[in-house]
Image (tube, rainbow, N blue to C red; front, side, top):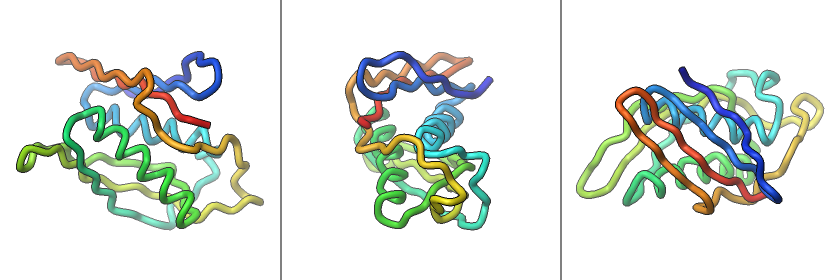
Length: 142
């Protein structure tokens, strides 16, 4: 069981993303972020982008993962609808995530702009892992 849902939050967007594994949960977190920005069903798979981020712990890794997609939208105008987390590994005392995203350049006529995301935050961030499920909660600053 994988997916995400939006939780109530007074001023920003709070997300719960989940999957059987940490990789699936991170994938769903990226899908949720993209859905906040635009209707992902209208994004065509024209551009494949390798994504690599690293951090000192899982919370920081989630933050860096989400920030990467905000950065790619802000700097290159890219939106994504497909995500794959190939691996999350401990390397020399740090966590490294390798993945891929598929999407295209944002086009206002084709992609309805929903909510602009300023940043991912650590506010109310939680990562709950069990042998059968991983749940990520995080807040996006809008």
